[in-house]
Image (cartoon, rainbow, N blue to C red; front, side, top):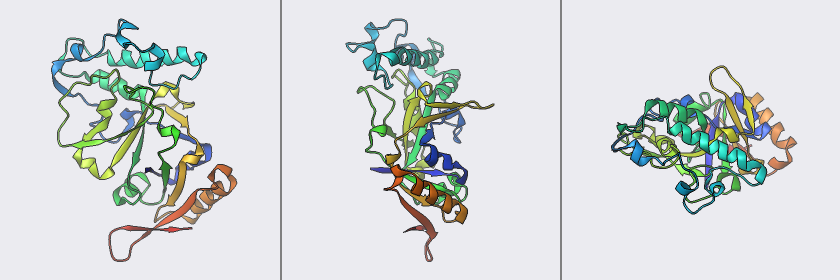
Length: 277
């Protein structure tokens, strides 16, 4: 399967550096992201008891339950610390609250979890307008069979693998029962259904690079450049942008397989046509 992501023309750093941002949900353009979820059961009953350790993790060793890539003993401490921090954020909801999850909990989850948003469609007119600066940017085609998108450690792991967004008419009426609030990020209003979105979630502490900003820090994650299969220039993309992307492809051995295309406006219908460059 291939998925796509739209970029503004200024985001050439994504293909140059081999790093991509996983964005905090608090920076999303949908105000309903991570909002409280109504339910008939209490938070205390739905959430795991964070006061105990091995007993509540079942028969798995603690490190085996982590949603992170702890491949060496040196990373075990960091992995455990990251998981505990995420769990502590979820624990900020009042334990006896019934009927709705805490607003504070949702806001904090939006600061510790990062999300990479992808789509099934490279020819969506609205997304080209909204996310690629009115068709002046570019769209990247990703190979999702690559290990980068398939790093799930356990059956319960909510992180490091692709999840399809479900579009629904009303707020989901359930409490999030997993040890992280990723489920909240997988439901959106059916108003957004045209985006046909998939999401890849990660713990922001695992980022490879941090750029501190006044509003929200930028967390960058390294990706293998071979996951890029095609770069599509927008219908209004400049010659300057085309030349820069061509140069990046020519000067990057890992991009020797990458196809460069351009979108053109169809003559007789409201659609885009792609031609190789």
